[in-house]
Length: 381
Ligand code: ZN
Image (tube, rainbow, N blue to C red; front, side, top):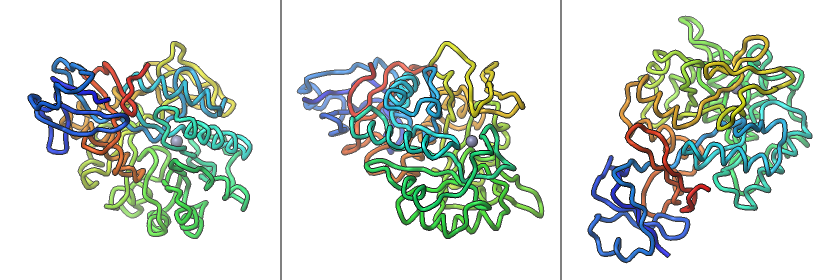
């Protein structure tokens, strides 16, 4: 049965179109046609967008929690469902549940839960992001440094074990040698660099070994200095890698974000939320790595005053990006969808509105507030 999305401002590869209809059959976009094409009338269902904006659904590669749930606290299938539902209200139709540094048994439970979610077809679950534990105490952020280590053979196999989804692993190259980066890469793990005090040369060696991303650029990484470019310098210089940025007004100064946009090739900046339980929940405070985290004015901070993730949702990140990076909606939308899809090597199926791709879509009003979202052609409950 085919459905038609009509009367919208639709972001296509060529830019916004106001006179097209998006046809969806089952889980996929079947065609983009003119609004007066006879196939539109032939559709069984019509979604009247009433002049609203239709974007490719947002993809968030760093989601620690939402809906009052922290993935580390309860790495279960039910948690993943609740986190996904909380974020779908803000237009996120694809995400990686993200586990911060923890013991191997928690990692095993988390990977098992994500595997179960993928196997059960839980909407939006694209894989897992393991943020640590192969990271550096000098840039621990809100992670528990007592958990930091290197993997033995058993743990290496565990990290590589997810099937049918993507695994992103954030590691610090001064902890994990290029040989380990290469070994993960050869097993299909997407290596992102972060929580690291690495020199420029160490970061560069990890890129040469196959790392392809940087986790929350600027935050918890060695800064760019004149004689010491650090990890930030390596990230900004490298043309091939993607950088995640947290555009919540607390993690990175807008000028630094604009510098990143100027330095990186088009399509290499991706919005991430680094979201914590307060997103889509009534309560703002939670426990992380044994410490109470207080949320005030959208800022999540632990007892040491370290930022502990964010209270940001993707629609908010999109609005902030337009305002602070001074970019048009089309570019901000691609940072929220196309770029992360490319980073995850999912561009053949996600990240754009085009025939053959999955029908992951988000409708926003003129104020860029989310009205509805669809995952695989199905409207969010
Ligand atoms: Zn982090």
